[in-house]
Length: 209
View 1 (tube, rainbow, N blue to C red):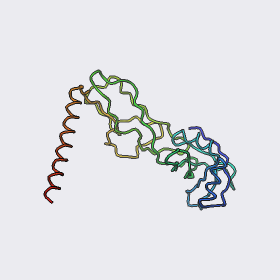
View 2: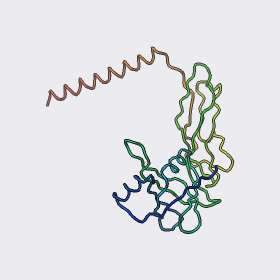
View 3: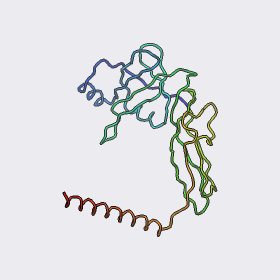
View 4: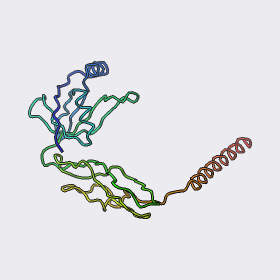
């Protein structure tokens, strides 16, 4: 995975007021931690970090901080609940050759056998990989899979250098029989009857109090 260079500036002011000023100026507060060193507080250009974070597990090289430019991975991103803009970023320092545990996307490719429907239980999977060689995802060929076919974590063909970090028996996806319109209607009807029954039971219980 190619690295993205981002110009960081050390941050010396803290609190809600300074944070608002930083965001109004088009930058984002961030903190870098890891490797047993003191946390480094900084600000990052908002547009650059927004574009970088569009790539899962993007490898970032920070320029502008004291000492050697450091490599890091995004660990947590806080966004505004209404507008969605980035409010704060947590970064974790990594080194060349270091192993890290990350989640990578699972992509299903192809169409299952006629009469079947793909039910994907997991869209990401945890793997351990070298920090500078994190795979961009895993492709699963579902072309022609018949009803009843299942793929578990241990069945996935992991990219070179990556090892599974989660439960090997976890169900990733399986093929189930397509439901007819009548079956869907019947299921919805049963749900409505159950809800009505629960409401009636609650009403009776209230009258008896």
